[in-house]
Image (tube, rainbow, N blue to C red; front, side, top):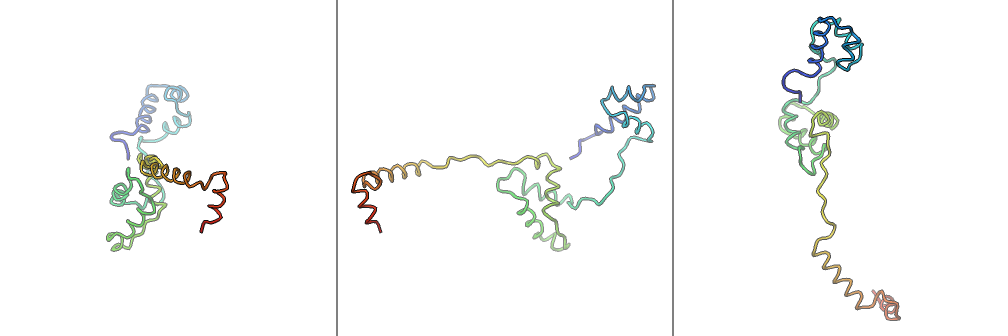
Length: 163
């Protein structure tokens, strides 16, 4: 998401233009604002301070698709890009418009969001529940009483006669 108001780049460009009008040198402005002198020179020769229109093909994710991706994936354990892709591609709105979206497009969109950059780790559970521990203890006692793992002759006979 873009920050509300003016971006930091635009603010820096305005500062560059203002300092140039006040008579500061390019190298001095670069030191003050901690930018490359080439950046100061570039903005001193440009008209205006707005970003240029981005070249290239626009992203495939529409605002509606972004909303569905967010609903499907944000802070949900077990959510995956593949499942979300399948849900979007099988939806009625996509079928009617014969639209397809790839896993890569969804992955790219996730990388642009703050919440999509971090992995959601599953909460750690204990490997054995209390019931499992009790059952294992009971089994251990049973095995110990039967003598299957003992060093006596009975243990060997028990193993030999096992089905």
